Amino acid sequence: MPKICVEFDPDNGVPAQPVRTFAATIGDGTSTEFDIVHDLNTRDAYYTVRNIATGEINNMEYVIDSSDPNTAVIRFDVAPAAGSVRVSVLAPPVAVPQ
Image (cartoon, rainbow, N blue to C red; front, side):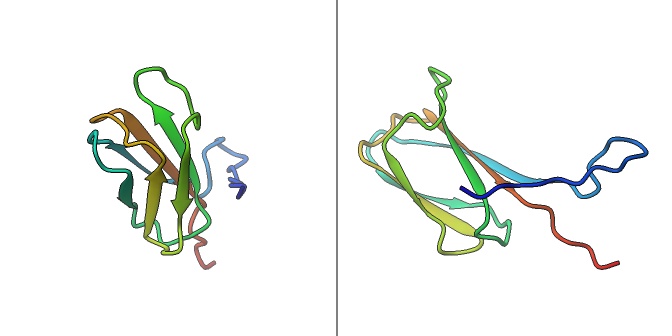
């Protein structure tokens, strides 16, 4: 699992470069595959898959294919109910040339 490290500004405690995020609610009751178009331009992302009704995190059978830097494909063994799953994506900050 990739680790995301965030450097904080010692003067104000604010991240020097913010972690980039994306989130989407998915599920339609019939599809088992969903494209997650996050446009974060990295394969080094951390994904959280949460059951909205129960709040359980990563407690479903699924596979994530992140072979594209801007889109991941999530495949479930069982089609999630309509609007029942929240996918969150965290990506490392973009390095800013100094």
